[in-house]
Length: 410
Image 1 (cartoon, rainbow, N blue to C red):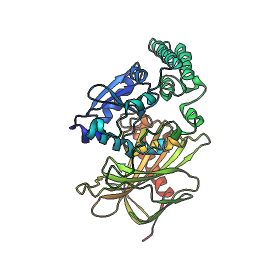
Image 2 (cartoon, rainbow, N blue to C red):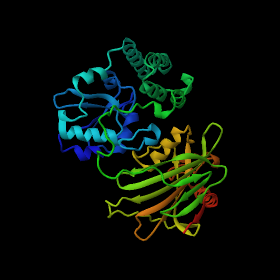
Image 3 (tube, one colour):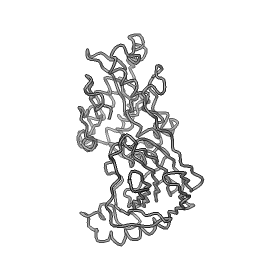
């Protein structure tokens, strides 16, 4: 995490969650992230109004004298959302580190002239939009949600560039109240990669951050077949009914080279019925002490390879660990217009490549749990039908083994 690397150099981060429902909605995410820096919640979106922030994540650099060094700009500090946003975090991180080291002498510290160009002159309509949004928030908190909707709509009309207005308004009521959805609005704008403007890093030269940079996905996909030339050398075949969603590759938690290939079976509205998540992972050489550890007593053979077997049921709105492989899969699905059902039941198959247990092939096969007649909550241990899970689980494992074909190439 960038803060841990820079905190001893007179550097601080203050994160501010912009959420009308305050701790109720933002709290679980902050708790899951376990931040070591200051984390605040802004129920009235005051920070967004003061700094003219229209999307998240947005960053502002402020020096020791309280002066703005760089105004609001998109601020991704890792690559967990790269597939969704299309932005690489390296330029921003390089600039941030340079500023922390050099202060006002950094090439990334904007001059007063450039700051004046970047800082937007007050727009009367934007000010009216903030007022309309604030009135909508007041009515919502007063229990008058239906009356709040026209004001949220007007705020969006007056400041159409604010994705934060859309995101918050839709979260406070049914999207149908607006005749559209957040996803549809993103697609109208040209897709997820158009709603995040890259920071102005004209001074940046690729490679100045130092260190080896991870390449893109290296496994090849043809139809429903994944071909891996190494680790392991294998051909993985999925059912002809699957649709390819896409791939992503990044350094997971700064310790593992991780590549995912994602397929689905979905209905005409892109609601996922079955998920096929194939992951190739190995710890980076700079962390030789790390090992993969699995203790499941259950095993399965696929293509002559031994796999550990685990299963679970999970509500799709359950908190997801920031930066996790699951978060990358979810964002990849979202960026391509797919939605998950209310609950999924999953089988995880893990093959450790050798005795060092530093590299693995992981395959997760998931199904819409509603096909069982139960919800994820009902099938969990503290639900009303946990006794049904053993039989359901047995069939799920068998279907996973039937649907995923593996052929070792060497």
